[in-house]
Length: 167
Image (cartoon, rainbow, N blue to C red; front, side, top):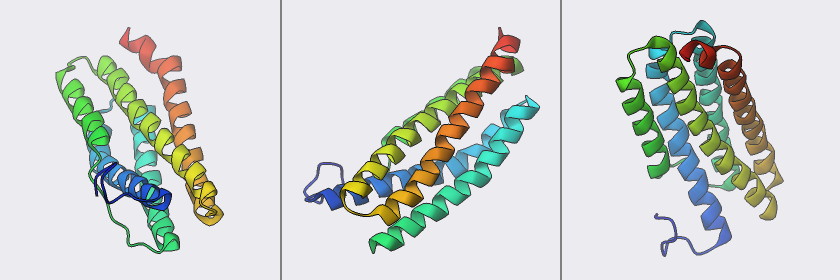
């Protein structure tokens, strides 16, 4: 099903497509996080990535729960945006020799991921409510809150420590 294709006829179809999009994105993030953990040298950043990997596993489980509540099977559709964010992160991290600068680059990449997720989850919450699916909205809001918290933690780590060392 492509965005704005004939397969999307209703607002509910659009909601389901975006649910499939973020499901794909979360699964791609799960694949990318071990590499980020391995490359991070700052102990707080490494620990944060490890914690977020566990959190992301919960996000996938919650999405599967929302699919079931919606009456759909969990299914992913390709998300070129997330693929691009991850590709860019891998390319940037591969080019950085200075470990302190690499940690700053990893935070930047992680925040790009978080911001994408915040947009998607925020939209899904609003759409679920509009569709009268407060059960789905409640679950999605929980993940949205965690994505905001992850972004805040990354920002604080960058400002308090990592950026200063990289400079």
